Image 1 (cartoon, rainbow, N blue to C red):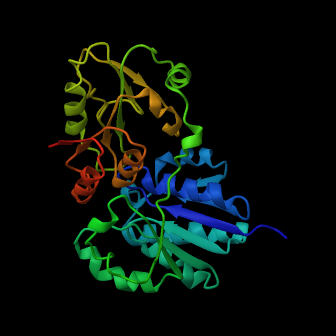
Image 2: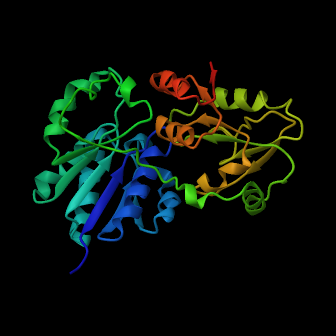
Length: 308
């Protein structure tokens, strides 16, 4: 019997949480299905490689290449074409709010099941007023667990329309390399300290936060600063201060190399933050991250610095 095809669609968020979670799910689904990852995040050309599955890139609405209503029609038609090509039975969407183009799939292919991977910790924004309607349009809602779950008081926290599962992560403790092997593989000096400053990939990246983080590291003797992309803004201006030894590493996932690091500065979304805390790393959290998880982190005895 042929394996059914499942399309895992993701939005373009602050970091790569939606995309990495879809990749983790795809890794587990491969045994009994053919998962295909479709994303509006540019990282889709790299991230799904960890799952070894097919992927497709759909330029997001934030590209401003077309009007909002036109883009939703474009998104719907792209996904319907992929459904017809692969005979997909399920479309899963991982994102804060399902786009109208996702929901509109039902108008063209009513037999296809829609699944919403709906994170908690919603803010009390006007989006909450559409929550009930959007939820009713889904065949299934899955809520990935969070490190600070008990501190979630947002609009989704009291709803009974989803299936709560354990946190979903690509992290596998069995794949972690020793400090010596990790540094050798990434070309870092084995005797000098190393720090990772990790940027997000969405519109919420704050250049001033990056410059502040890098400036604060200048006095650390012999430090190797690891970045995952060039520290430049949209105009090509270098955001890194003079005097730092910076190494750009284009490697994903970095989880198996994390033992080489002494500290991580996180400029990512809450998914990446939570994942690293669960691995026991010292982190420097910026104010842009959701403050709801901080008390829970400290109660569990993990190291945290609050950078304002």
